[in-house]
Length: 337
Image (cartoon, rainbow, N blue to C red; front, side, top):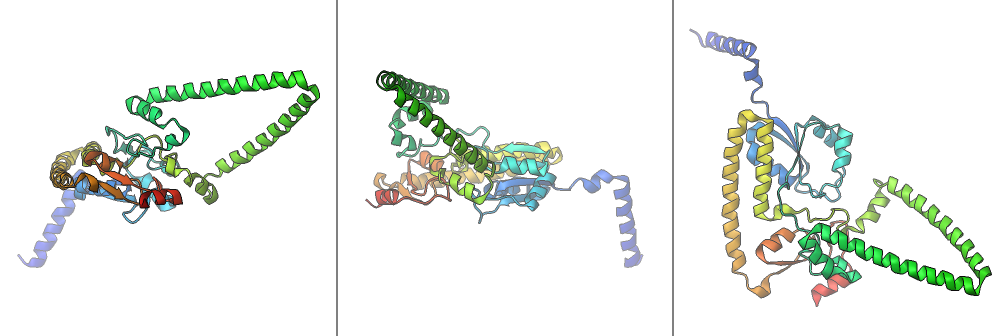
């Protein structure tokens, strides 16, 4: 048989096989997966291998804090079977993107099961301390979030009650001494109230334009206090123990989306976790060798709370939690002195 006839015969056999076994022809199509940022994208690729087609929205050279979704990103999310996110309000733009894209696949929160650190737990300069309630509220938050909420409510009610008592006394005194002045005061209050209403409407309009650059800058000014992220530090992957939780959640999601390759995903997961555990041993040995007076690290971005807690380090980040904020002169001075 000539080589030409052999090739033709083989090609005919392959075509016939694909016609009578369409599932075989499609079996190796990779599962489309979108990961919100590079750490998650790397994990998906390590676990899924050739059986996933990964799109990473925020690359290793990007910044998830200032990321703005594009129409191309919305298209990728729409076509994804699995969308893997960090959670803990790390992706403040996620809801808008998901809604705009019409995503109807499986949403996977990688931080599910993580022991999240409340903001301020790893920061000796807790922002609540500025108001004189930091230590008490910090302890309440560590023990129980609901207790902190209750304490906050009690504080608000007490403050409100004091304010009411002061207002009533002032009002009574005002009535006894000067009815005409009271009338003038009422007029002033009405004018002030009207001005306040106008201000609220303007502020509300600004809030409606939240996506505009100017309003975004206004919100960025609060990043140091964690308002943009929520109640917890979202950078949980900085702890290798948490990284294993991420890997387990991703493995489970891929196995559910593509049961035919679940065994491969599990095998890849086991090899990946073995590498993480070996790295943990290496880092632990290095950290234990550090003297107690050499355990403070200065960094621009306060993203290492989990790493610091795990290894007994202190990270000083005058810029705070957001890469959009700027370090104050006072914060920088504290580091110098």
